[in-house]
Image (tube, rainbow over all chains, first blue to last red; front, side, top):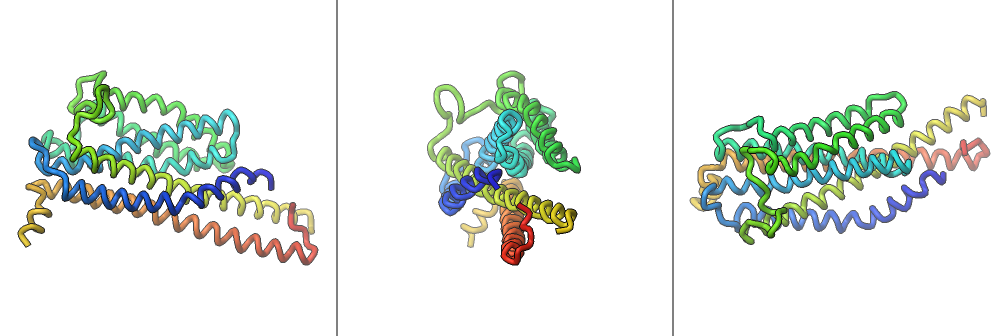
Length: 244
Length: 65
C-alpha cells in the first residue's frame, strides 16, 4: 500500500486544515457580503451596479488562479508522476469552471446596464470564454478513456497547452483596444480603487480562495477513497480469478 | 420598510445585482454540496470494503495483498 503513503500524509494535513479553511471562508464571505451590499458606497458613475464587481472580479481572479494551479499540477503529474498531482488537477477543474462561469455571467449582468450590451466579442471577454471551454474540455477529456490514466495524461497535456490563454486574459486589456476596463487592483503603482471598495473586494477574494481549498480537499478525499476502492475491487477480482 | 425596498432596488440596478449574487450562491453552494456528498459516500463505501476485507483476512482467506 506504499502507493498511498503520500496521499495518507496529504489527508492528515488536509483534514486538520479543513475546519480552519471552512471557518475563514464562511467568515470572510459573510463580512465581504456585508461590506459589498450594505456598507460600501455606490460608485459615483455606476451607482449600485458596482456591487456586481465584488463577485465578478474575485471570480475572474479565481478562474485564472485555478487554471494556473491545474496546469502546475498537470506539469507535476507529467514530469514527476506524483500520484497526488493528477488528482489535485482534476479536483481543481470544476471549481475553476464554476468561478469562470460566475465571472462570465456577472460580467454580462454588469455589462448590460453599463455598456448597453450583454456580450461583446472583445479580447478580454472572448479569452475568458475560451478559459471556460478549456475547463470543460479538460473535464471531458480526463473522463473520455476506458483506461483512466490515459485520459489523465491527455487532459494534463491539454491543461498545459491551454495555459497560454492565462497571460492572454491578463494582458488582453493592454494588448488590444477592449471595451473592458484595464486592471485597477493588480497594477503598477498600487490599486486605483477606494479603500471602502477594496475591503469588500479583498474579503470576497479571500472567501473564494479558501472556498477553493475546502472544495479541493473534499474532492481530493473522494478521489483518494475512489482509488482505494478501485484497488481493493481489482485485488478481489484477481483473487477470484486465481480461484482463492 | 422603505429601507428594505430601497436596498432591494439597488438604485435601479436590482435586476442586475441580485441575479448575480443568487447565481453565485446556487453555483458555489451546489458545488460544495456535491463535493461533500461524494467524499462522504466514497469514504463510507471504502470503510465497508476495508472492514469486509479485514474479516476475510482473519478467516484465512486471501486479502489480495
